[in-house]
Length: 401
Image 1 (cartoon, helix red, strand yellow):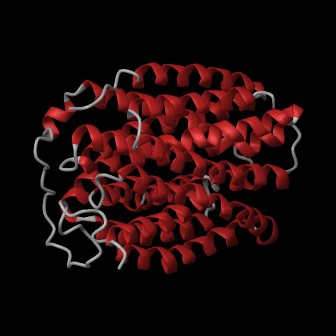
Image 2 (cartoon, helix red, strand yellow; image 1 turned 60 degrees about the vertical axis):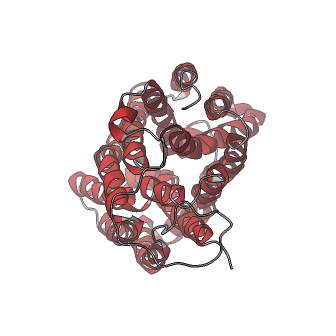
């Protein structure tokens, strides 16, 4: 029989696929139709991503505490139900206030059924192969790109409101059953090749491994804050690029259909980084692998400034998506290696909260730049500098205990 931890990985894969393809990477497809219908500015529409980041920034540490205390099943099933309701409410939007409110609800639900909760669940089932397991699960976020062309087609054919309504119903049908697959590891000391199924234990605080630091001492560790600050810069850059990719490509003359294909390729190509950098993290020092992933993002950003010529777009897709894809799982692998599993959810929640604060800033700044100057390109150069700072900061996260 298959080790049950792999069922956790696969369930997390498909939940991540749907959330990323419809909410995170897929939102860029809704951007221009919403602006066209309501006449809102790019800055006003971009602010929903900031509001989503604010809610997830607040909720991520709480989600980390709750998943350590109560387990992942309840959080994921409730989160899936809330996300479905958020999509339905968003489809009924008639004002900017309602638009923001629906996105806050979506963020609240997504915070309960994505990164912190899913990665914590996987971390509690794996130790020796944590990089590979998280890499496979995180590939779901990349595979979400498969949903973007159908979403673009649905918006163009049936309208953005009908599309959002359908996405809400599909989340209920798919996400809630997948959440029920998740359960706690009853024997964290067992080998990862164990195949005998066991019943889940009663929920309670997760036991610390021998010799791992306490939650309080982890908070005082320099490496923990290096990871947090570097992730702040990384998420600031990533959310701005993801949110404004299709508007940017349209501004340089690319047709909406082709821009949608590029937006779909972004998460799909990131799969190579999610799995590849996860594999490297099991072999080489994780902070050095993270530096390499950040370096890939810098190369991709430089290429993004010249996409009008054609070939730089291929360079952008070859470097930026694998780079950010790798960082998505490396942060969890680094926390697991440095600080163990006893406080993993709480520590990852804090890191996700810091990253989300960066995600609040990037999209509105990009929208403001375009509203006032009519171009995005100078901002991409600024983002290269921010990622360079992230590389220097993460280099201080030395090998753990």
